[in-house]
Amino acid sequence: MARYTQEQIDFIREVAQGRYNTEIAALFNARFGTNVTEGQMKSFKANHQIKSNVPKRRRTESVGLFTNEQKTFIKDNVKGLSNQKLADLVNKRFGVSITARQMNTWKKNHGLSSGLKGSEGMSPPNKGTRGIYNVGGNKTSFKRGARSHNYMPVGSERVNADDYVDIKIADPNRWRGKHLIVWEEHHGQRVPKGYVVIFGDRNRRNFAPDNLILVSRAQLAVMNKHGLIQDNAELTRLGMIVADLYQKISQRKRG
Image (cartoon, rainbow, N blue to C red; front, side, top):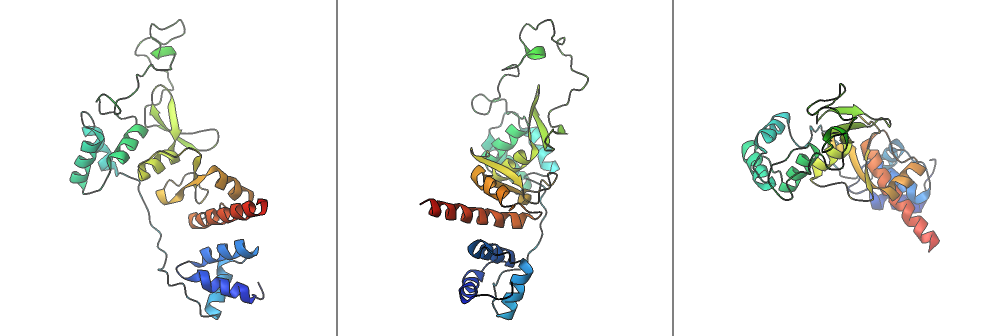
């Protein structure tokens, strides 16, 4: 962008504090309908002695809610303990701060049960099923105890027709998206109705919690329309902000 108006300069000064160049550029472009890059914004700020006073970015890695050692410990101790007691046991053993809600979500996503009655119990394995689990069987059923040659145990992973990784969460054939499971374990809650989880860098094999972003279906529609999902999770999060601005502008126009 060759020249900035006074209004644009004042806008940058106003929003620069506490924001990174990518954020400032995204807000600027949404406000003025331009296509200023992060590099251009950085140069402009340097030329006009504008500082954001933000810390340098650091890339972080995350292994999920539990380590492999913690997962094994939970599986070994899950029977007979409520979610709260099991969470307390894990917290004491490993010095972490897992809530009962997070523990409950993790157990459900991995097909684990305490064996206790009530909300921590599991549905009967033959509920809503046919074939091998059909009471009394039928002519086409497998014999009791027999399994198909392509049987996959609970916890197995597969790639579905849409190129998403699924995890088997229960027999006989219950699967769920791995990205949903990882997000729910990390946040200790189910994905809300009307929302989806997307990959911040568009890599469907990157399950780092920081790369999994919860967006509403309305936000997703706008982000897809305007190409706001990038190859960088931070830029995609900025795309959410821009999508919200687009929605507000659209609402004002309709008003």
